[in-house]
Amino acid sequence: MKRFVPWLVIIVGLLLLIALVVRQCRNGGAANYQTATVTRGPITQAVTATGTLNPVVNVQVGSQVSGNIAKLFADFNSQVKAGQVVAQIDPALHQAEANVKIKQGALDKAKADLEHCTITSPIDGVVISRNVDVGQTVAASLQAPVIFQIANDLTKMQIDSNVAEADVGVVQVGQDVDFTVDAFPMRIFHGKVVQVRNAPITVQNVVTYDTVIGVSNPDLKLKPGMTANVSIIVAHKDNVLQIKNAALRYRPAEATPAELGSRSPGPMGARGSGGRERRTSGRTVYLLSGGQPKPVQIKTGISDGVVTEVMEGLKEDDRVVTAELTSKSPAASTPANPFSGGPRRFP
Image 1 (cartoon, one colour):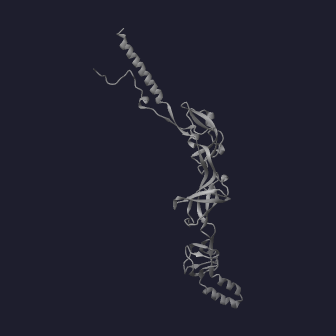
Image 2 (cartoon, rainbow, N blue to C red):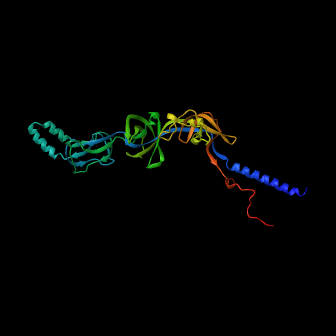
Image 3 (tube, rainbow, N blue to C red):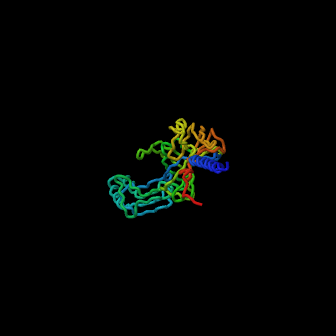
């Protein structure tokens, strides 16, 4: 009897070792899941675009007669008033022509040409461009040459932004706008949509629509021509259930065709150029139950591109799967054979 006891102990030990190795192999291939908690908070859905800052009123001042620029009374950044003289064309030639035409009975036209030698500003504003110098000759035979560009009031500007056709349907007059410019990257400026123009702009088969945004510029930090990175606020909700968008994209490898079909966004589920996911009905997410993902149908609302509103199907503090992580230990990847040990040891 004593002879069989050592063998019994050895056999029991081997069985336990085999059971342990088999368990490690199974656990080594098991999937671990990354999850996110359903929380409450605000969501802001926005349409992004780029645009250019421009004066609200920008007037070109030209000459109706040809001649040499004799004097300039305004320069870049000069403040001018309506009716103020900004340039003078040498009137000598026109004065001589007037003297001749007086004798020929064409006095009215000669006087008009003489008056046009004095160029005045049509509006109050600031000179943003001067295109001539003193002594330069301007020719008005075919088209009036532009001498100055005058902006009416730079404390009030506008952004002409290009909104994609996929997003223009949700943009409306009166919506709030946040934007930044490269000159002040850490500062957020604000404005409002004042006009959505109907004329399409097509560039390389990409259709956009000019959306005009009114901007207040009291400190004159914003300059004409600056590029604005625009975010138009189209929807905002406070204290709503929300999940990460990664949970909407996750699908387990063994998902059924019906579950995969619920993911298809369809015409209302595409992502717009502004980075937002459009509202869809019948989305599927996976709750972690008993260590395994369980499909749940939910109804979603607005999205900011990172999180999405949950209208039905989940409650606060639920944990939804966002990714699958398969971890294999070295022992699990190459299970050891209990019957083939390492180097033989001798007592």
